[in-house]
Structures are given as structure tokens and as C-alpha cells.
Length: 182
Image 1 (cartoon, rainbow, N blue to C red):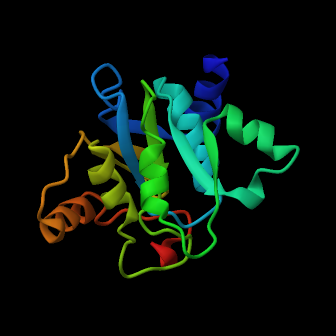
Image 2: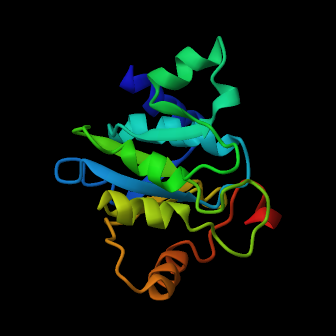
């Protein structure tokens, strides 16, 4: 089936993957993968196609309301896990626990936390990576150039401000599907 994903991704949609195209799959079995800018539902299928093209298993969390028949089966097969988003829960702790006991787990998240325009990223992904003691791998949804650029693994330090500056610089100038939301 990989040939079909490659045909759709490369030939029909005209996309390409640049940078760390293996996402260090042989050495980095666990990571928080942040994808930006997240401006449209189109990001989802581009990410699903890209991970199949490069042969990487990745996971994601989504609001539990999406995990209803018939989508629940599909989302679980492709690596999804339902997340209860009710107030009063420590979501960072709950998500960091997902890494425990798994040999391979790459959690893909949007640092914006929404498809709307934001001026500041959420910090949960950062604390999840630190709590789970895993690196952060960045990749872009660059609709202007039709490419997913993937960074080398980045290990968060104790200087959150400098770390965020470094990560945001990776995404500088990238335009999402809806540029005004980038």
C-alpha cells in the first residue's frame, strides 16, 4: 500500500519531504513531534500520508468525542488515542504516561493547540516531552512550497524561553493552508 500513499502524496498532491526524512526512526523510538502551522483540517491527511511515505509510526491524541463509530476504529488503527478534555485534569501528566511501557511512541501535536490564529504557542507539548524525557521533533505544513520539512531531534533544556525561540525559528516564514492563520 505504500506505493499508493507515495502516488497520492508525490504525484497527485505534489508534495515533498525534506530534512530528517527518517525522523531518526532507527534511534529515536519515542518523541513529541510538533507540526505547524496548523491552520486547516487538510493538515491531518497530509500528515497521515507523509508518515506512510517515510515509513514512520506516529500517534496522536484527539478529543474523545471524535472516537465514535465508525471513526473510532479508523482513528485507533492509525495511532489515535482519545483525550478527555474536561477541566480539572492534569492532561500533561496523562499524556506523558502514554509513553510508559511502549517500545515505540511518537506523539504528534500542534504547538498552537488550535487551527485558529495564535500569537503564543501552548506549552503542554514542551512539558510532556520533559516529563516523558523524550526529544521534540519539529515538522512543517508548508503549503506555499508543498513540503514537510522535518528537523533533527531537539532535547529541551531548562531554558524554556531559549528553547521556544529556537523552535519557533524553525517555522519562521512557513505558510499553512490558510496563510492568514499562520
